[in-house]
Length: 378
Image (cartoon, rainbow, N blue to C red):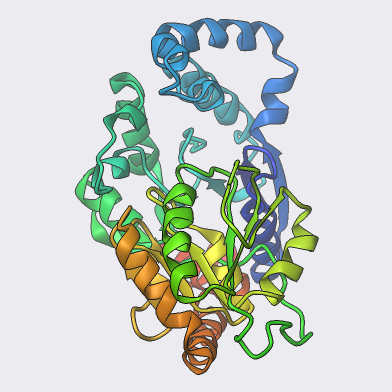
């Protein structure tokens, strides 16, 4: 009798892996969720690692040297490693004790014959072509792209964090719409009940939280903030997660912090702004809504799913500095609107963007998709 769920992840970062494993266990308490970590499987195979390093150089060497590709990303996107992971997982999942398998992200195919298999992902490689700037340098090799298609083809069902990824899998990878379900995602931060410390949204503190300063639109935010200061000379900008060289008044660069400390900066902000130019999902927006902050963001990727203009924030076109400044100026001048937007964002998170709701949606679809439900879940 099957009594385990194989949960396949590539490390515990992003933290979504920890949350999804937890809610799967909560929703299927009659089964043990067994964590299978791809990184751990590969860690003791030194020869495989050396061979794959050679394949990484072969596939992406010139682009890595030119700064167009990240070596770590390229390492996990070679046909050689894809096939090796597939072989390792086929052997691992041959155990008949598994009722189904569930993998995080779409970097590898962890499916096994005759075992129902589910995928939860926040992006596809071809989705990069749907951003306004269509940077083809973010695409990986054609052989790897062909293998990526098999991830979706071999899955019993695919869960996504956002509608734009759902559309990508259906339209760019040829999957039937019934095979893909958007279940959203939850926050990495557990908001507490402590009151905000933003003087009733009147302290004019704009918060940016992000690691990749350039991609997240940091330089554009600084230029917009310079315009904001002309109207609101007492406005402040707080940058958390990175340490760019910024030479403007009233700007505090905090750098990277433990997750538990970031919540204090959410609590002391009046507006959250991350005008990112490319974003698979953007969990920080959900965190900001959890702290009842209005959001100003760019109209890219998953963001239009949860930032509703005029309801809980505003959307701008990527790199539109003037419009960004205009929306920030408007919100800083209106604490009542900031509070109203923040309340709406908080309500949205409570309804859709929490891990318990995500787990329930997954459970419903898994039960509906498994070939013989009564055999597994009687």
